[in-house]
Amino acid sequence: QVINMALILEDGSGLTNSNTYVLEVTFNTWLSDRGLTLGSSTPVEALLLQSMDYLETLSYIGCKNTQEQALQWPRSYVEIDGFAFPTDSIPKQLIDAQMQTAYSIDQGANPMATVGQAVKKEKVDVIEVEYQDGTISQSTITAVNKTLSKILLSNGYSFTANLSI
View (cartoon, helix red, strand yellow):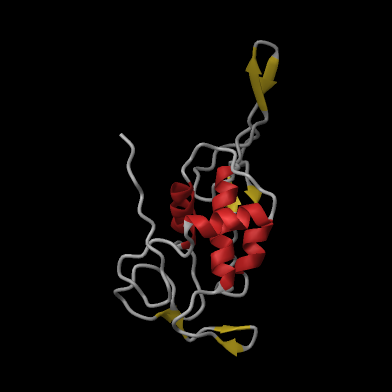
């Protein structure tokens, strides 16, 4: 049974039922403009929702406009590059970060994935892998970190993802 996932776009009005800052058509245009293609069979809606799961865990500057709004944005008391940001808008940085994160998830770098040990040695017939003690395998997605840097609180959050090869 196929479940139809409904994306409900936050347009800056503080909807109580929104679940995304980006719709499929915008994401597809973003991919096309950059010459990127999705590699998995995961539906685009699922990728966008998974990226929202991550973005909603972060600590942003300013404060939510209302307690009832579903998502972290829109926000009040926000300055970007020294200018007051409108309380009824969604920053381009956040929209771009949602698309970058969705694409990264598609490519196997999910910031919400469980992080395991780094492989030190493993043995399969003649192939051997051994896990290094006290280490984890992570990849930092620099583009997402840089995109969000102007709207995150300065608390050291960064996008890291477990990559299994």
